[in-house]
Length: 232
Image 1 (cartoon, rainbow, N blue to C red):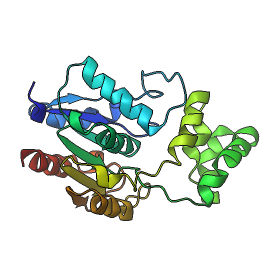
Image 2 (image 1 turned 180 degrees about the vertical axis):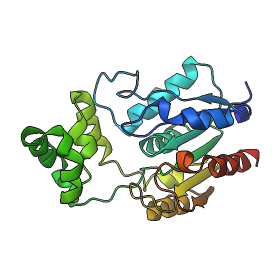
Image 3 (image 1 turned 120 degrees about the horizontal axis):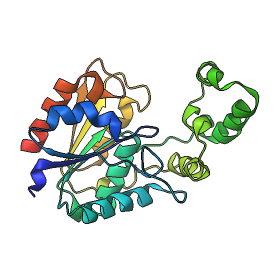
Image 4 (image 1 turned 45 degrees about the vertical axis):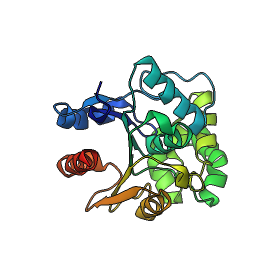
């Protein structure tokens, strides 16, 4: 199997492999595409609280089990953090790295500190349909946590949200493409610029007039960018 023709896409939090259905359609004639469900999402169960290292090891084992040798690893958002961690821990198993709005940078702030307490209050005293409105009104980014029912996934969220990969990013050896939406409100562009600066061989591509899901908002431009990167 030609490693340059194989791409593994890792989805974000509260998504599944389904989020890449459109993108897979665009790429299916040129690449062999794999879109595994990460533990706790889609059809993949979670058996314990997991950190980024655990998810990276899960992908490492997935590659071994499916006999995929040195593929291109592409991760979006939470999946981007996993992809980066995989490149740090297991540089020998990937050929290139693509980080899409990757949540690899964490800034300690008030929102993170009050996440658990606020989510508990909201779940106990407010109707579920009011969550988005109340959270937006309060200016809190805790809707993901408030929706979690699985206790292992709840603990995983608390672990993941504290993991900052900034100190480790300079260890990444793989040629890296960092793709960001110009108007990304979930993972701000300043994080993309910092990630591209910290990874020695990284190139940053910003897609104008897009938000967090650049591959859904402008799939043609997104595909063109990654094809150019892969062909280098």
